[in-house]
Length: 192
Image 1 (cartoon, rainbow, N blue to C red):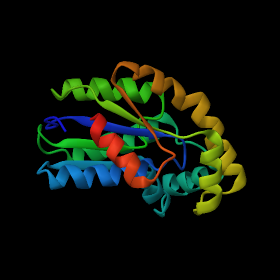
Image 2 (image 1 turned 120 degrees about the horizontal axis):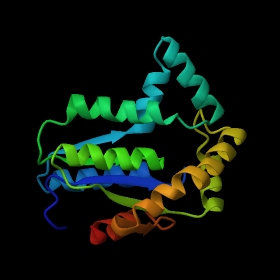
Image 3 (image 1 turned 45 degrees about the vertical axis):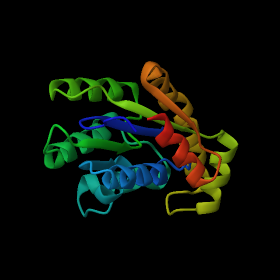
């Protein structure tokens, strides 16, 4: 791997693509190489918010149960709030799992990183087919993986996330995600 100090990586992929697993393995690799890494998973931040006994917490849980995407204001607010709390050093490597997921968020994240004197993020797209995504989600059946929620998330990916992938075109690292976990990770590390 090249010198990655101060870089930001965003992991994008269809639901069930393994982006969470791949980002975790990538973070472990970076930490083993001596990097200070800040990792954020917007889905986990949203699920934690949905567990809160507040009005926004209850509303968020309802959104999650339906398989609906967070509105831009919520996803980006969660992300910025966590960055404000946790980003301590310009040399930290930032790894974002599942964000940005809308074009507005991608552009805002670029602007935020530029304002902080950091380079624009690199996007790592864990690419799996819609059929493979559906198969994996059905097999894992996490609490928010109901049949309707799965269909909603797959449809939403096509309409909302694909424009983000196109936006990142010049700095997109596309990784075939249907292989073994270790094979996918090795391809990712070789591409960074």
